[in-house]
Image (cartoon, rainbow, N blue to C red):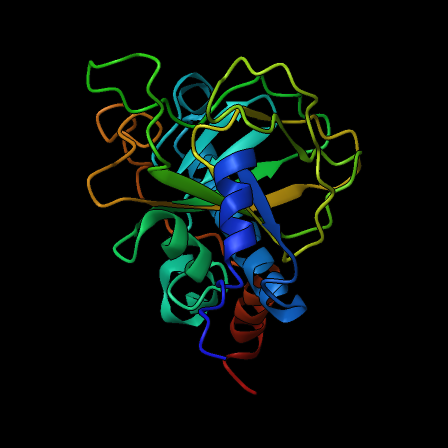
Length: 263
């Protein structure tokens, strides 16, 4: 058979272009999920320790920092540099969603941002929003450009109606005011949802009893950069503070003090 066969990615790319989002199940395994959860937990603990030590609670509420921002009540946006290191290549260059990202954006698509949205019990539902506007060079306002950036959401816990999944409006990347029913996928931990940066969506409130960590990874065409959500002129860096010792480290230190370093 010499007839060309369509790429297995074709259906997913078509769904991304048409609906504005597509789901890929089972992208990272349970061990990788747990490793990421550890980084999120330690990162949040360290940032909040720094905020408390430096008495910056009001500044965190008012504006936030490059490393940690409060996007709405009980909902934190964390930057976690450790996730860009080689042990986490399964989230970056080796991620199973990369063929889809390249098919949608081109082989020169670049990683622009990554982090974690951490929603605590009691957090409120966000207003409807898109992560970025349409590209408009001053021409015909009815023109809709092809996708220029996508977000990849990877939940680190199973998303349920209680813990605050994300609600999307299909097709709203083409028309923000599209009058169609919204959808709220219940994803499993380690799955991925890839969506057009312009898609209308909102994180629902967390009425559960546990935190809801959701990794986000943003890719774009090389000419584009989000200078609003991650503007260094808008957000300053959180001043450095020594990391708080873990309970095990504090116990070990006490034992060395009491027993003079004896094993």
